Image (cartoon, rainbow, N blue to C red; front, side):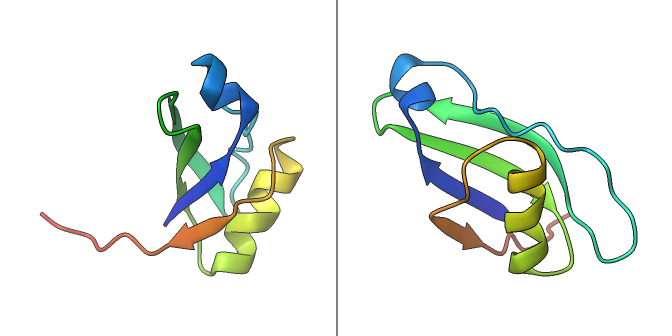
Length: 76
């Protein structure tokens, strides 16, 4: 899933504070995060079973709660 949130860090051109990589049953972990300074957004690619688990991963990692969470279909 991709989590998106508005952030001052994005406006400054830095990455978000989301750093939780601790997975486990029913938990999500953040794989990669990047900022879009022009849009003022941070995007976090997060692997997890539910949108709620994705939001908790951000909170555990010290980042902001996502404003939006979108499923990302797997393509090969």
